[in-house]
Image 1 (cartoon, rainbow, N blue to C red):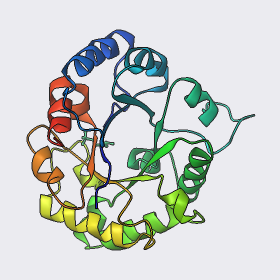
Image 2: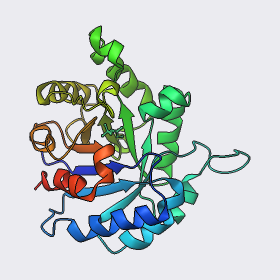
Image 3: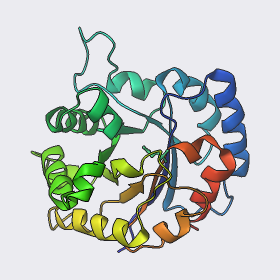
Length: 250
Ligand code: 13P
C-alpha cells in the first residue's frame, strides 16, 4: 500500500522572528531537490511565526502547520485561535492532542476529538498525537492506552473523515529524552494502532513516529513497513538534522 510519507517538524515554543528566518533559509535551500511527490515536509511553528514562515514557504514544497487550535469556530474564547485564523496565515496542518498539551494544559480525549472535528470541517489536516507515559510503558499498558486514545480521538468520524487524519505515535518517555523507541517496538505499536482503525481506512492513513527522532536514527525507523514518517521536535530546529530525516524518505 502506497501511503503518503510525512516529515513534520514541531518547533514547540522555540525561536523568534530572526532565528526562524535563519532556520527557514537553510531548510528551503537544503530541501532535497529530488523529494518525491508523495513525501510532504511540514513545519509546525508557533502562532507568532506563521506569517513570517508562510511568506518564505509559499512557493516551495514545504507546508505550514500550527501546534494547536480551538474546537470553537469563533467568539468569546480568550487566548484561543480558530481554524479560520490559521488558514488565513497559510496553515494546512495542525498538531492536535500533543502529549505536552494533554499533560500540562489539561487536554482530554474529548477536547482532542472536538478539535479534530473542527479541523476537518475547515479542511485543515490534523496531526493527531497519541502515546503512553513511561509508567504505562513499564506496566505493559501501551496497547491499552494507544487503543483508547485512538478510539476516543476519532469517535464519531466517518471513514471518509478519518482518511484525512495523520496519526503520530509519540511515546512520552521518548520525547526530548534521547531515548528513542527501538525500530521493532515502534513498528509493533504502530502496526497495532493501524489495526484499531476501521477496515476501510487502516491501510490508507499515514502513521508517524515521534520521540527523539534524529539524523542518525531516522532511516531505520522510516524503513519499517508501518511507519510513514516522523514528527520531529529538537532535531527540527537544526536545518541539517531535519533535512537528513526528510532525506531518509528518499
Ligand atoms: P523530540 O524530537 O524533541 O523528542 O520531540 C518529539 C515531539 O514531541 C514532536 O512532537
